[in-house]
Length: 585
Ligand code: G3I
Ligand code: 9MR
Image 1 (tube, rainbow, N blue to C red):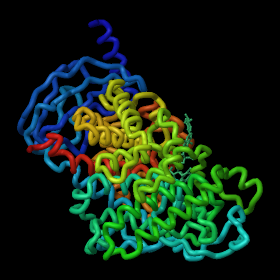
Image 2 (image 1 turned 90 degrees about the vertical axis):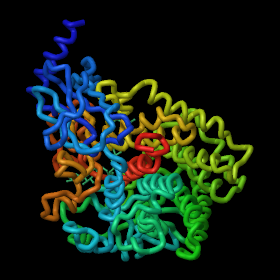
Image 3 (image 1 turned 180 degrees about the vertical axis):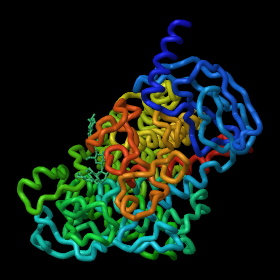
Image 4 (image 1 turned 120 degrees about the horizontal axis):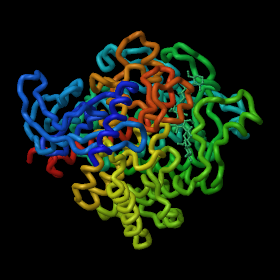
């Protein structure tokens, strides 16, 4: 055993020198007083002890023993866990291990994720197209409007008798998708569904969350104001003549690395697709349900959303299998479109989600067949191309609140599948070397891997809300810890959130604005050994394939569908911490 540990430590020491990996990594925002608290010592020196020291380095407040070394499965890193969960005193601290640079400063406090939640939601404001960001809201990141989208052309792939190619339509507003300036319905789908669910799950919390946006003083929570900015754009993406929804509103090719408003290239809506249309149905049906709670503030909006959803559902029923295949489209039409594809060929998950939202909003049995047609045993983690889990969350939420329900929905089966998914994460234990649920398999480290971690957290939080079992909540927290720094790169992946957050995200405004600090509150994609951007990364293993480089769009871009689960998870902890006894009662 001793021999094995020695070998591990030797490998570790070599790796430490070669890789220059961080010594002590942890959630750099911090911890709840009565919540779990773990730091990971990567490639530690001989010392077996660790210390919690006040941030001014004057007082040592806790001493603990490191757990035995563990070889990571996803890089050469050898780690030892420092668990200081029993330390409950609020304040600002560092972790110290003899022979290593001390950790980043972190807090132990109630409401430790409040600033993070507000920043992550504010991130969406910074993504708004077609309006100037004023200094009083945007601070140093103020900027002019870009991409008004009031004269958008029907691309030949989307031509119909009533709207031939070249017809001018208006599709203003909405969020830019990511580091690029295009607007994609499929990715808006999961993003909006996640944010709308955040509101439905934690309405009281969001009623009090302020983000200093232009609408902050109206009668709606800021979260709903922000959602409305994209919702109104989505409504313009429906063809009024048949109910179908254009896949995206886009340039033909990506803009250069310039500020919004600099390029004035033509914008197009392209072919309608079944995935975009069904995602639109789900978002509109869920919005109809939420906005009908605000009839005097938003008269008629709820009805418009439901009408749009039903009309789009009809189109999707008539066109059940139209994929958006960009290469095929480019072979037949001009100009070629080379921006993000969000191509998806399987629609049972979108149909299930859409039907689940329509049923929950209307109580109508006509949506039950599509709910029951979903192969629930194949349930997978939510992603832009797989939205079945969003339908499950909604049906379970509805079941808990008991209106409206149907004898013909297999609630037990759905509940069991969610428990089995969440239970699988907990029992398999994810990445043992970092004690996170993230890292169950190397397949977790894909383009946008940080959203894999956070979507796992959402599944676990739902399992907690269905059972009151704190184990699920603690498991969910391990992945927020991961995204905030307890990972093999040592980065806290949210811009502006800590002293080791990315500075050079692939985000056109952040690259072009001449301001050193990137736009804050944005989540970088995270480790991705696919390295499709061809940038030379310093490490290529699944959990270390990351570089803070503006050209590295495969690991260091930001995207709305990654920020949305950050908002959800961070808000969930702020909303649930007292109930779950992570904080002082
Ligand atoms: O589905 C396969 C899976 O079977 C396989 O195991 C895995 C191995 O890498 O690949 C999976 O496909 C990946 C797919 O995403 C689904 O996750 C592709 O390799 C990967 O290239 C693809 O990446 C997408 C990327 O666009 C390129 O199309 C990302 O998910 C998606 O988030 C990203 O989105 C872009 C938009 O196109 C444009 N705007 C920016 C945005 C964020 O980067
Ligand atoms: O900036 C684009 C980013 O938003 C996309 O996610 C990425 C993949 O589609 O593509 C980026 O654009 C690059 C293009 O694909 C190739 N030439 C360089 C562009 C970025 O500088």
